[in-house]
Length: 587
Image (cartoon, rainbow, N blue to C red; front, side, top):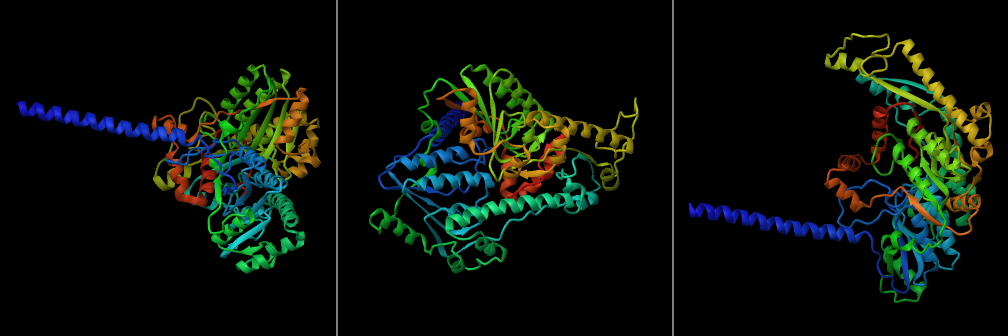
């Protein structure tokens, strides 16, 4: 018996010791995580800021879902903090230049334009910008073209072939599965539902895609031509005829200055700096150089301008970061109104839209802010379309980038019916007992009849009419005038200026200056919303069960480039209520 108790006690003691060791290790790891994401490293003299920009860039730092566990968790710098980092480097005497290393980047055209202008501004200090890469796609080269010297490895390449839009159509697949996607929409250009109701691009959709792709490509090639001292026709010829097939072609057609390996580029940098060419240059990563918590301090003005970042899909009832939840954002505006020091609001919109109900909640709070005497200025990013335009329409002033995609003023509703799938594929049939004629109407278990479809169409038409009225009121136009440019049609920011949907072409700085002007303030500090969680905070939320993004993370990793198409289909199947959403994925 004594040996039994000894064994039990020793086992308990062993478990306790093991638990304490694990707890200590866990605390150490978490402590390391907590500290790793918030500190910059010392910068030595003659350093070079190293930009790779190989991850998606949110508008606001950390306003993205965690992409899985990473012991080296760093903040995901947002677009405007990246711009601030480049501006900081411009006046930092220890930073002598920038080495840009673009690869297969994927960023919106307006996002790329912001970074590109920051690099051009950096060069005005007299410091150098070099770009080197093994392989570049068009987004990467768009940034690299700014550089004083563009280097490509002797076995590298540039994938430069012009713009295109490739859309997957799933109607045939759904028909084979027995799923009837019952669609109603308002606006002949409102093509968000085409992938589930057609087998090809409609003539109206083809027209609008052709127009804005060409408009964006014109801007894109003009910028490259100016930076590389080429003509626009020369740049377009390279893309149209796919002339860069070998590394030497990139030099031949003026896209690249030299074919060099990494060590040779490093020697060029060291030679420029007057340093020992046998040593590697002192490269500083962006994440080690700029810390938003430190580098944005020092604003001591009493008055504030609130900057609200609305990026991602507009949704109902979601706590996920990187989306625009209607109730969450409505509360943000209510909280902003309580701060008497806030004199104006800049709403930065980068959204293709989504739920009309959520959009309307946000719009209502914007109107209340204006009623309280707080001017609201809109700054548009890559997208401010459909629901994204719905929340922007009442702005006191609207700024867009030339390549912003906006408009898409139209609505749609989708009601999947699985009646045939359940009956034909699974042998499941429904029968009903009803208290009224429409008791089982608009459910996924029965196809709509003509009467029910007419009712749903009336609801969609009513929402579209409301949307037109909102835009007319916000933009000082008649409903008929708005209807002429609405119909779900997508416009570039440059064209939107011509037709009256925006007030001025400009960036975030322009919007802030306008907000200060309208508020009558000379000096101000900015405060940003939403309060995004860091990757560390998201990890803790996942561990404690408050947030479970891991399934989505794994899906992204496994599906790669196919994931956006899967996500679009999933959203279409799960969305509730009337939608005001951009027609497709633009990449």
